[in-house]
Length: 363
Ligand code: 5AD
Ligand code: FES
Image (tube, rainbow, N blue to C red; front, side, top):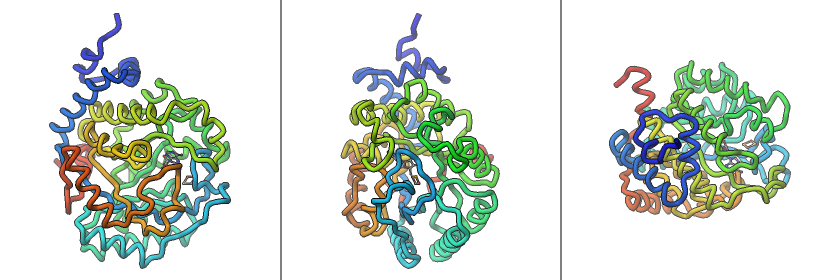
C-alpha cells in the first residue's frame, strides 16, 4: 500500500520513493511539507538569516556550460573584471554594515595571475576587517594547490555546485571534453573538504530532461556527501545559450519555482542543521521568491554588492533581479523582506554551518 504524505513526514529517514512522492505533492499537499520544514527550521537553526555579500568579480569564463549566459561561447556578452579598489570598497561596505561574510564569485579561470589576484584580495579583505569578515569563494574547479593557497589566505567556505548529480545528465548539459568532467568536479568537492573548507554544493531545478527521480537523487547526493551548505534554484533559460533550443520542453516557470521550494523544504527536513541559501534565481521567477524560501527552510541570503555598472553583464539567466539597485537599496529592501518572512538578520555573525561544527566536533 502506498504511504500517505503524513506518514512519510512523520519518518526520520526518507527512501527514494518517499522523496519522489513528496516532490510530486500538489498545491494542497505541499503545505504539509512546508509546515514540517518550518517547524524543523525553528527547532534546529532558529529564525536568523545570515548575509553573504555577493561580489560577482568577473564574467570572464573558460567554460562552456550549455545553460549559462556567461559561457565562453557567448560572444554577445561584454566581459569585465571588477577592480581591486572596487572590491575592497564593497568589502568595506559589507564590514561597516555588519554583513558577516562575503562571497566572491566569478566565471572559471585558473591562470596564475587570476589565482594570485584572488589570493591577494582574500588576504587584503581579511586584514581590512581584522579577520572579522568571513570569506566564501565560488570560483569553480581548481587544483589542490590553488584551493590550499586561498584557504591559507583566509577563505573558509567554498561553493561548487555539482549542477546535477547524475553523471549522464551532467554530460548532456556540458561539452564532452576534459574541462567539463563530472568526476573531476566530484574530485574538487572531495579536495575542498579534505583541505578544511566548509563545502557547499547545489543543483539547478527544472532543467530539460531532468525528472523527479533525478531530483530525488540530488537530495540523496547532498545527504550522502554529508554536505555543509546547499544553494539551489530553478533553471531559467537564457536566449544566447545552446540549451535555449529546449525551451518548449520545460515545465512552467511557476512549476519550476514550486519544485525548487519543495526541494528546499524537503532538504531542510532531511538535513536539519545545514545552511541553505535562498537563491537569486528564485527571486527571478517570483518577486517574493527568496522570502518564501526562507519561510520553508533557507537561512542564508546573498545580497548583491557587485558595483551596479557591472551587474547587467553578469547575466547567468534571464530576468535576473536587482540589476539597478545599489547596495543601500538592497539592504533596506532585504531587511524588511526578511522580517516579513518571520526572520531576523544575523548582523555581524558568520553564521557558519552548524552541521560543519558538529562534524568537526566543535560543538
Ligand atoms: N539558470 C539558473 N541557474 C543558472 N546557473 C547558471 N546558469 C543558470 C541558468 N540558466 C547557476 C549555476 C551556477 C551558478 C553560479 O549559477 O548553478 O553554479
Ligand atoms: Fe562559466 Fe557559467 S559557463 S560561469
